[in-house]
Length: 180
Length: 180
DNA sequence: TGCATTTCTTTCACGAGTAAAACACCTGTT
DNA sequence: AACAGGTGTTTTACTCGTGAAAGAAATGCA
Image (cartoon, rainbow over all chains, first blue to last red; front, side):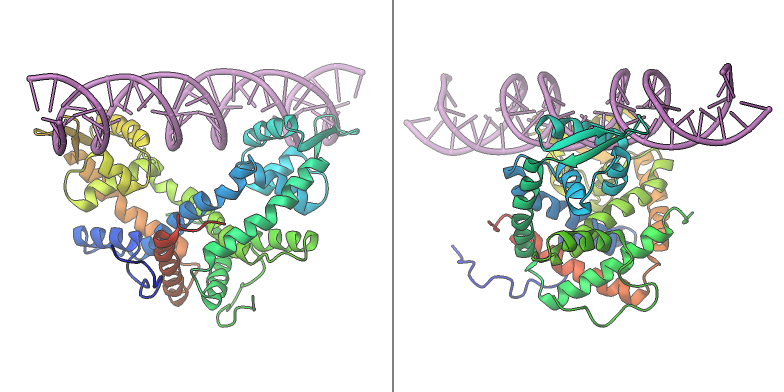
């Protein structure tokens, strides 16, 4: 029927799912300040959409995003990490890290070495195969992400990155200190 | 990727976890454009932090966020919804909705009514208790979210909401159409 | 030294989500 | 009327993450 040629011309404001939801809430509770929803709702929804989208290149390599995050932490720090450090670095629980490491070790992407001084701790490093996998995926991943974000012009991207950085920096500083 | 001008008043740039990660990547792979990470990484991290934070008021009411999303969908639309509609409205799978509805029904927050014409479909509505629960939680929730977001000044909040709305609106339009 | 305490990691039991199959029911066609 | 195929929902089997407890080893202190 209609040829969808001229893309993203007037697709600007007020037509995302979150603003529709906010409109519904305002109709039911006109007294409430729905401002926060327009930020938090959109961050959550964007995160969900982007994760689903960016999982595609990883899935081709047989990795989930949490698995890639582990390998990536080892690659980008450039040295061995203990399970505890990996948990902190990837913001996940120790138990989850243990499970993922088990699988990644079995797949030969990661190697484990015991500490000589303290026999409780382990040190993990990428195998050659692991490093090659990460280095192979990362450019694809970034290319894909660049393509997805291209729906925003470079100026908008810069502003968005700046604002998110400001928000995140302050949240990481203050969260846990807020009580309501 | 030029440095974003404009904003940044006080405790501004370069001090969130994402920028530290990006610095590490650039040291290892100086040739790659890490721009997308500064947006996608931050969106993901903000989503994780905010969700953890905003779960607190809900948890006090004995609800998880996905459960509250279901109740909220029923409340804000103002009419009965079928399981399928609820799944679409909350962006979750039908199976997940079935499970949550089972629990919420057992807790007396939601009621089920069979369709008279089509005996496959069910219609769900809030009970009085369910509506009162939602209406009691929502103001708390919004107050909490307002407090959390107050780390950004109102101008920044407005800009952020606008940029996210633009991104989300276009992602929802284009995602699925992007192949790399 | 011996014992309590702390730290690092793994194990366990469980809850929650998913995809795919199963069910139950409707609808259009012949 | 009968049935093939489609649709709405639930069930099943499985994966993955979580918090709490267990396990194992170091450390501090009497």
